[in-house]
Length: 403
Image 1 (cartoon, rainbow, N blue to C red):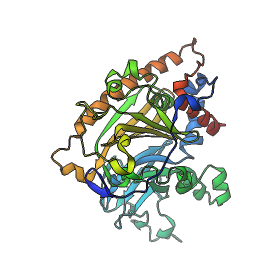
Image 2: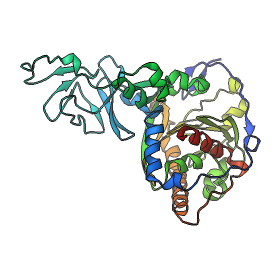
Image 3: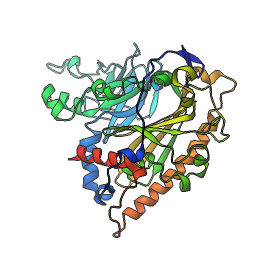
């Protein structure tokens, strides 16, 4: 039967997944990474090139570009990118670089514009990237505006989220072949996300809209954030408020290797992960299709290399991770609800936002403590617990991508 996502009817096909206790997938003997992976500027530069410049990375959600002319800027692997919705509401991505003298085109982080004009010499581009206007170039022999469109960045949508891949753009700039693009690390987004096809359909992610974004500047390596997110071994001591509602030892996982990792934890019956403990929006789990148990689970998935996806019965939280240096990470956290939920009288997003802002800051604090300790000459890799099967698996996949 149809179900409601924050009050909006949707349909889905029920799927069966096998969840397993974390200890069942743990490989005995796994240890934390060597110190150099958290401190070395050379390894950090290698990560930007091998991972963030060659993999699909999350930059936003389609709701940010819901109106024609909307744009925002994303910084990916040291590159400034323009994400824009053209007059036909097609979402595109370009390097934020003028084709004339290379000037940065847009400085504001977001806005709305009918066209993109270079602040230096007023070359003007359409939101589809075409060069539209160029002062005083008519007397230049052989000059043709069609040769000077903005350099595109490969872009695709998954469940309403916007991903870009610089590897494909760089190979196109070199007029490379498809085989070379594959060798450089490019894979279509559809192929990349094939293991997750339909997995999150009941949350109707494309229809969501962020109620709030909070930016965190964390003095810790980006990998520590992933490792922290992927286990609740620390929860009883670090997150007493969270542990009262969601038992720290209740984790079960269905994705245990590769770029997608995670599973669920239980929520106390009749409770929600909010400051009040009550649901802050209409539930999105259908009792008949998903079973009563689905209303009492929160799902946590890490999507390599920069997305943390938390799916609650009444909202969705998404973290974007942006490494700034070996010892600093910028984190963007959004709380998503269905757009029609914003007009409901019982809608109380702050209840969830305040709860997770508290939990986030608790996490960032211990990640910063880890960074400080790892920086010591006394640090050496330590053994993972069986409750840390996902961080151990994440490390293994990371090392393969760096190999």
